[in-house]
Each structure stands twice: as structure tokens, then as C-alpha cells.
Image (cartoon, rainbow, N blue to C red; front, side, top):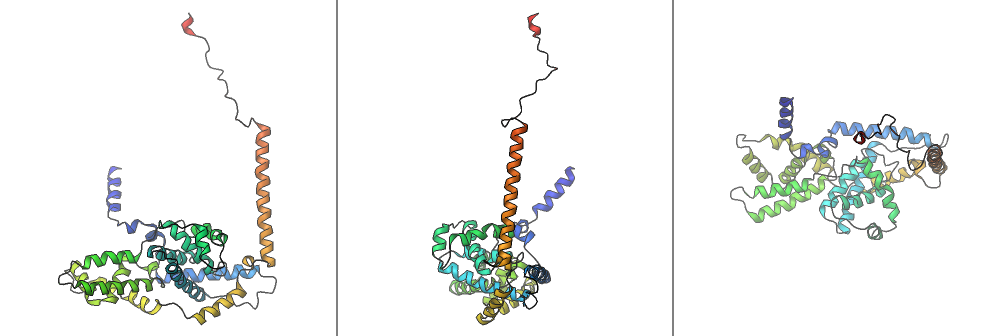
Length: 345
């Protein structure tokens, strides 16, 4: 037993902090796994939502594809960044909110929950989880046509969809550490290095519009961003860490990340998003459309179940009151207890 325990402790001690995080264990995928998960979620949503339309009314509905859902979410990822900048929130809040938005739509469909609504809640939740809290009222007041209930109504849903995994390891923090380390290289021009860092930060921000954080580690993304800003400095740093390799393998590993950031790191075309959003109005889950027959039916069903639960609870309390003392049963007297005081003899 001792040997097994020692072995376990030794192996676990070799894990980095990142490898022990919920991000590493729950929110890392391959590109194929992401595509498959989104396609499966989309197919399930289309089937379930189609059944909620009135008989025959869904036959002409053009539901969104998985790629169109991704496009709409990506648009609101960009809006999320703009909102955080407008409200003066730090980068930690911005990056965290964008991660929450991506993760939410790995569990849910835009045909149930519009990204605009979830984005507002994700930002508010991120202010709390990153220790930059703001009051709900002041936050809602700064966003046009938004009530506190609009944000609070989705908060538990978002937290639940995240699996309550609130901590996020970000590439911009890894980049800061890399920048400090690069300063130890010989013959480094600090003015040039500062410019390289600022450029790399922009690449990290562009990466947030892509899936790279769901596939690669923060350190890989930070090195990629640095390499995009200055290939020579990135290569020099890599060689300083692995002097036995003239061409460090890590530089080959980051090539796919470079391609993703370069090809996908920009907001989508507004007209393409508008076309998808117009179709979303027609294929949205009718149970989520206030005033629709399906919505009213769902509300009635929810109220009926809540009333049944209240009645069942009341009946259980009433039965407990009738069957026993509400303050608990009296202590049973032990009939085998010897009451004689032997000391009286």
C-alpha cells in the first residue's frame, strides 16, 4: 500500500499546475472532436425544436447549421470584447467572458439562447469570478434596453453549462511571462522588444475569436503570438530553452496555430451575420418566444409542476405533524437499565 501511494504521489507531483486544472481536464479538444460535438449538438437541437413547432409548421423552416451557429457566436465574441472595452473592464474580464461564451455554446444551441443575451451574462459573471465585481444595477444601466432581470435570468444557466469551472488559464498571462523571459536573451533591444510584445498582444486578442484555446495550451498560444510578431526572437528564445535542438520542435508545433489565428482571427462579415440572424428568428425554439403557443404551454406546464411540488411538500409536512411530535420523538427509556443504586448497600 505504501509503495502504491508513493508511486501515485510521485506521478502526480510531475503534473504542472495547468495539467491539474479543470480547463485541461474538461475543456480541451481536438479540432475533430469540436466539429463532431457541434454537429451532434446542432442535429439534436434541430430534431427537438422541430417537434415543438405546431403540426406541419416546421416543414418549411430552414434551421441553422452548426457552422452558422459558430458564425453567430463569433460575432458576439467580438461584441463581447467591444463591450468590455467600452465599460472599462480589465483584460482578464474580457478574456474570461469570451471563454465562457465559447464554452456555453459547446453545451447549448443559439436556437435556444441568443448569443447577445448570453454574452451580457457571461461578462457580468466574469467580473465576479475574476475579482472585479460591479453591481448588477449599475452594469445593466450602462447597457441600452437591458434590465437586471435580463442578466440575472441566465446566470445560473451559464454557470451550470460551464460545469461551475470558472477559473480560466489565459494566453495573455503566459505571454507576459514569455516577454519577461525573452529579456534575458543576449543583445536584446528593449525598445524593439516592447514593440514586439505589443504586436504579440494583438495576436493573442485575435486568437480569442478562434478555437485555439479549446485545442492548444496557453503557453503554445503565447509563443505563437510572439512568433507572429517576431519569428527571429521566438526562435532565439526556443533555442535558448532547448540548446540541443538547432530547430526546436516546438516551432513546428505552433505552425497550425499560426494558420488558425491568421485565417480565423478576425470578426465575421456583418452582412453574413445578419442573414443568419434573420433566419434564427424563424427557427428559434418556439418555447423561448414570449407569447407563442408553445411558450404559453411550457409556462403552464412549469407552473403545474411547481404547484404539484408545493402540494406534495405541504402534504409531507402535514403527515409528519400528524404522525409524530413536530419537535421530535421522545427518548426511549432503556428497559434494561439498572436503576438500583448499588452504593446504597
